[in-house]
Amino acid sequence: MKKLAIVVAGGPAPGINSVIGAATIRACLAGVEVLGIQDGFKWLAEGDTSHVIPLTIEDTSRIHFRGGSYIGISRANPTRSPEHLQRTIDGLERLGVGMLVTVGGDGTATLAQIISEKTRGRIRVVHVPKTIDNDIDLPDDTSTFGFQTARHVGVEIVKNLMVDAKTTSRWYFVVAQGRKAGHLALAIGKAVGATVTVIPEEFRGKKVPFTTVVDLLAGSVIKRLAYGRPDGIALLAEGIADCIEPEDLARYTELPRDHMGNLHVADVPLAEVLEKAVKARLAVLGIKSTIVSKYIGYEVRCADPIPFDMEYTRDLGHCAARYIIEGGTEAVVAMINGRFQPISFEKMKDPATGRPRVRMVDVDSDRYRIARSFMLRLKREDFSRPGELARFAVTCQLTPEAFRREFFHLVKDEPEIAVDVGLALAATPTPGGNAEGGESQEGGPPVT
Image (cartoon, rainbow, N blue to C red):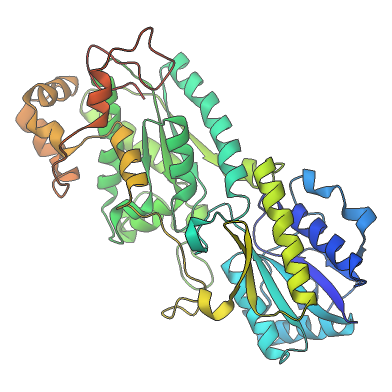
């Protein structure tokens, strides 16, 4: 029988080792020899087949407790040239590989399909989707593996920052990973009760001026300060950088581009740029605020998986090995409502791009609307309440009319909302209050 190889590509995500271990155990029990391709496709693309290790039950039975990748990882992409792709295929065939389990994101899934097509089925391929971004379009809102651990660890980090922010009277601008979608930033922000969370989806595919994002954050600082709190936490998805008009953003920082000319959002110093700009905006209004930038990404990507992801990824690894050994190929491995469901590569594709569809945050969902209602940010109804408007204006040393001119552009397209959860909570007495959410200041919005 042909050998089964496992390769991990892209960026790390908690649970990789669980997939490797479970797939190895299932294959070995079926009498199939398993190879671990080290460092992704890096060496195979160069024609080097020496960076391969045999995987056994003894080697892998306890690796599921740890983060990282037992066989390494890389972002090397063999499709960057026909020569690299052919070397990769030739290397797999020299190693006697007839079954390939790839673990990665959308780019790795595309590569897996290409390998299957180029070998005309001589190498069967199944793909296990991973990303802490949670943006692979799996059915029934199923998480991508690693996302739940990333959220859990991210929440612990931000909880500590919230205490520091309150203790030292400062703001933190926390940028979370999420190149295209804001799932991770929103999940962390909603769970901890961050003051405000900003994600790409709220701009609905439109490019916005840099000043819009600056004023959005400045508005939260002002609203918070108006109720006696000089501290706060803003969660920002890194993909916001791609929502800002590029010519506008280029005036504040150099724009890193990839080899295709696309903005490389992970390399944009978004937090620092916004920190400086918001400080400057507030200074013009007579407000001095201490703002500190923080990035969450590497701290969560190789964290030890929480039990949810340990169990989930062991299921995925087991099903990947079982399916491919039984003859399956060209499918993404998914566990939907406790049942294994192979999804064909073709079904996962976006017809417009030819790549797997990207799952975005549904900003029309109740889940997102609830998150927005608890955020402390300027809302349309603030401008129709004279008392609120006057409170914010005084904080900025402006008249209510001048404050409206400065900030109404943020909310002019929002519909009127009948009930503001923040104000409703503030009107409810909270015996003793609590550390962050729920406690109110003189009848104002909750000091979240």
